[in-house]
Length: 451
Length: 143
Image (tube, rainbow over all chains, first blue to last red; front, top):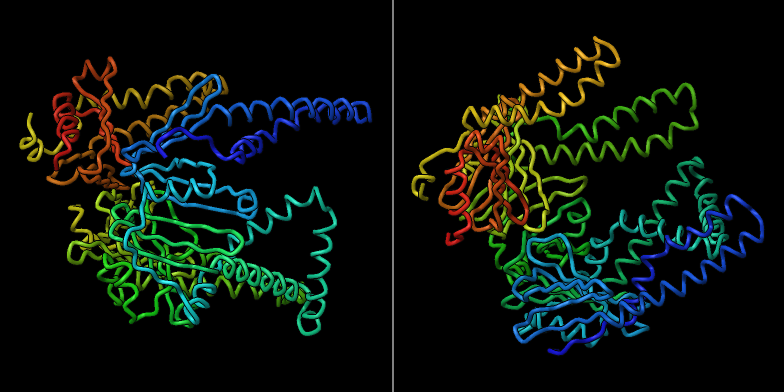
């Protein structure tokens, strides 16, 4: 481990991928000329470019090294004419993530992402699987861990609560966009399949509504499958110095977070968590904000105390003081709801066929308004036994946060109206520049800031 | 000035520092004003009035500026209509930066930047002696 080593050859491919835009340059001439000769010339130029850039990437890969010295400091050096060296001490590491998508597993590679303390810029290394595991064990060793693997109902709850529709939608769109050049008919075929489902649903519903329903259902199913694949072999552990988790069926991942660098723990409550009686617990360290919950917790069980004893208390389950509280909570959902209601009312007379589909966004915004009302009643800040506890509403989730990091910065902002009612918006800025805002908090609750 | 004195003192911007900051705020307006006057006399006059209002806002904000050092944090508060308070724990301070331009030097003031992993505080135009002492105290790090 102490001697200098090469990266995995996939590092060269990764560099090559970053130069894809360069290959568009010769095609500009084809755009003007629009004939076969220009196309042949452009293709020849692209071939030369490909060879040249591949040679440069290979040279960078061949000349670049990484090593871990006896003190546990990681040295990464990129060389090609210019030499770029980066070093990271083991104590300066907030978190690390090992990722193995399918291609990486087939080639025996592993992507290691290191999150330095207090920085947003990460260090990404492409190593072999064994080297990555050895590096992780040097930087954040797993010693005498307390293991926990979800089973049965807990695993099911983990799958359902870990499903993220928004990120799935982005990935789905990206996948369709990427494959369009290789299989132009794939998108049409997929839409035709969905069209059959929509036609089936349209026997009972208007066509627009059937399409919306089918698209939402498909998205939910895909995100469920994605979450289920991530939940396979899922294990979470805790040692004296770190929290960690690993899992994944096709795409394997492992995450290790240094306990002393944890920003906060976040219990996210939503209608789904109330229905399932399980609550997902998210943690973040440095700039590392995992998309998946660390674990799901059934209220009343000792799991939370075992894995996160720092989270000794939760924000009190009481209603916040709403006297003179700002109505800003209701604006993000209230304005579109009013607009949708107006459109629905207008469509009743002008386009009756649109009325029912318009009721869907109206319902969604009404639900968001309900969630905002929950936030209006529940958002707040408490300091109990020296620990800062927050409660904040974001879309459908009520976040109950317990702040761990002692180096947290604060910003309290007051509008002219807030000054008159002695309230302020409190923003916590964690190392790694992650921000959490609690709105319209009474100044009396912020006495620890000495305003 | 030592730490005990800093702990007892609230740092405010002296009048000369406020003037320097107002000059800084006025400079972009002065550069752009000829272009506005080029359009028409009225456009130039309106532009100057708006810019003068902005400079007045800057002055009001400078007047409301207060920075304070406590045993465990450094706090900056500013703003009249929209007051903002920023606080960084002293142990989170990773670096400080002192800036003195000729104007600031003539006014005997310094711009102090206090950096932490998440937030950054700007103390514009505090007296040079206080700025140097505050920077030294913050960089001692033994809190």
